[in-house]
Length: 624
Ligand code: BES
Ligand code: ZN
Image (cartoon, rainbow, N blue to C red; front, side, top):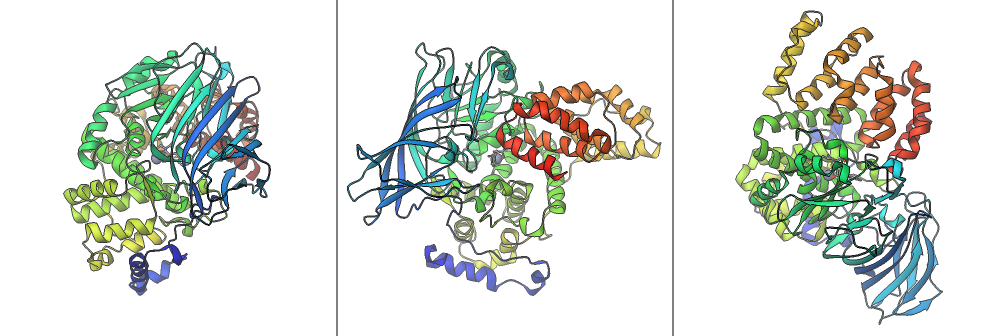
């Protein structure tokens, strides 16, 4: 929609397209023109938008529902006569506009992906609107856990996962990453539980079960988050700490003790941390993601607690979102790579400084493998950084294109401008765009003016438009390499030259990332006996490292071997992390021998998964 673009932006867009070389045309898919309209919200922020929320909620574990009121402060165009919210499967009880109950609001038709618009009439004097509502079983953001689904087995647990467009399933909101608001909240829970949010948090339970929160920096709705459970807090440093069930808190504190150091590193590169505290909430194992960057309180899966800090790059990742994502936010889900590609780049810079380049090189090589996998798997038009997700679920854009192609692009930029210029640019970029949301076109314009001082020839020479708007990889990037991974490969080569006889495999000094590479590359043509023998020697199916364990299950099933069925079943029953579940179920389903086992395990395990994982695995089961 050109009318929303500033003239300078318009001309630079034309420039991008007019300077495309003809050789680019052959593998060209569609050319997408950037616009800044979020197609995944019903809200019309140009007419009326929210600026502050006061949320009052009662968390009812008996009925598994939230009964609440959102009171929104709004800002509007003088001509606006309505404000539109997103809701999805919510029951609206009443609406007040400026203190007076109104019955003339209306709900539009329900779209299976977007839910419904809630239209509330306002006039020129309206400053706030209040909506009383309750959630129901269709609240896909929420997972209500029974005590036996938690570590302690004694208390129930509730947590939310709002990204990308699930906030609207637990509160009426303008559910767009381009709309930011501050909030306060008052939440009442059973008095033996503690509530925490993506906001200021206390350090312990209170007798009444009433918790007050404030988030004074503006955030988009997808960063609204709540968790309620038998939680304890442990301090790690003056500004970092861990919330977790008592059974896991000690291990978590040990695993994450470098968090403050990560913050210092990130600040030294990219400018001050803007959210005061950075705490980590360890969720029950059903959490569908590795981590979620809820501001001030990252939510993480317990499966990254390996005992040796080998998987804490994930903390660096979620922390890095405090700059890329939470401070400077993708304006629409088409611009998702601005969140994730930048964050993977920042994550690697933090890990490079914390652990050294050898470790970081391994992360980069494994990331590049993920990218190659997705480039081979995805339809071409889904391999550009900027996407057109109109009419689709924004989660479809959650691929390693956004993450790894995005990070590779920024690494390529760094290689061309030098690290010093890159860091200066990023620091300026985070500062200039603090607490706002930007589009891909905005970013390119800033790259042009700030980094290249308006010298468009440099943008052209680096083929920036091709990286962002076209499928695949332009080809000028440097493919990451790692001496430690190289070492694994040569060991494997020698081993395969000797017909995989086990004595040849010297692995005593391998670290977790090397093992991951090993397992990814293990030929599935080896016999089941060989796999069995490998498992006997290296105990992959009992590994304390869940990444290793999950890849082992996937690869050995692909090779036709399920040895330790009990271990596999226990893992699938307990862990709800989609990234692990999907490939394992997929491998089982594509093998006739294990197809029915997959279905019978899923039948029991499904109830333990969050809706995000359920939806993906349901699809997988239907496909087969
Ligand atoms: N923000 C994402 C998780 C997300 C993305 C949730 C899109 C819903 C929709 C988070 O920062 C993330 O990327 N998590 C990764 C881990 C990371 C180290 C790559 C995950 O959970 O696997
Ligand atoms: Zn992320």
